[in-house]
Image: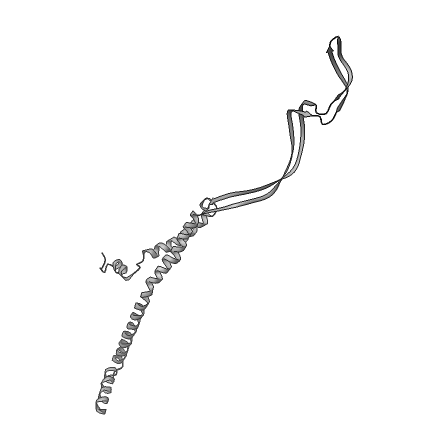
Length: 208
């Protein structure tokens, strides 16, 4: 048994070391290269499983979410109700011109009135006299007065507001944000999203 074990060790040593430096260097280098290539291949396969998921995350959820939400924000409307609760000062002169009728609230004396009276055999023409008009007498008059108005008016309004953002100054920055995001979004959209799409893009077959 010891002889067989020592023989195996000598054979392995001869395979690695044959008494010459350069062949031994190439043998060890080739073995390391194969080992590193295998490790790299396994690592690439492990990472590639997450590569398409990462691409989908960045394209559809990050850049796509930003791009389409910028579009929706530009197309949105601000709808609300603006409540106006205030008082407005009012100052002006109101001119009143009208024909109306007034009623005396008490007996009213008119001094130095001119009276013309014709009755029976009595004829009086423009005789000066004093007249007393009883309460309740109706007098037609022509009213022409200037009424000063100085007051405040309470105002309470509910004003509906509907503002389209694309018609405001916000339209330009929203479009600018879309133009910033869209090149990256469209570039990612052209990349394959699975190994099957990658094979089709490279022309390796397996495509319908």
